[in-house]
Length: 189
Image (tube, rainbow, N blue to C red; front, side, top):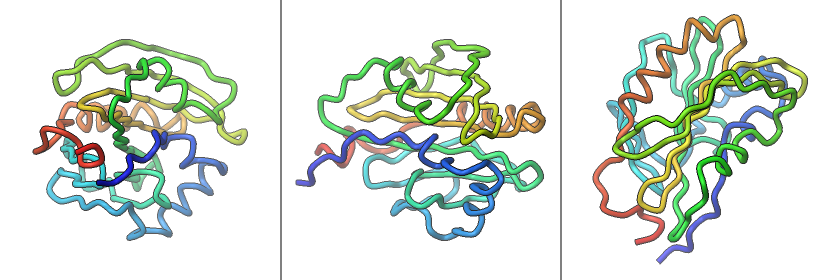
């Protein structure tokens, strides 16, 4: 039996350099994705399997040095959508604390909206904000949910100018989210 990995967030960790530098680096590491596989909308990973809503052809899967289970870049705008799962038996952290963990590293935070939404039969916390990462202004949607000893976090990150044109893609990505084919996550079986 494997020892469960500690909870890891993936949003700020993926973007420690200015946005354009990070996105350029992300594109250059195509094929360096996490150890999971992705096919026809289903991600099968070490901790959990999940389905996401389909993105259009302008979105390309990328790897971000093992920071995300699943990440996509939008060619025309360089926006990024990501999803991550971390599983640990008995993990019962409030959604607000998990959200706070996701925004570590961001400064000058301005919350535009925060609400609880239904996602895959569970309650999730969905937040829309503007913030700076290494001095670069970005606009984000962060969504975090707990299910079956797993934490799932999803995010959209874009420049404020590009954000309105890609937010509908993120909504589609979220609407299609569903955990797949397990009664319990692999890491805690």
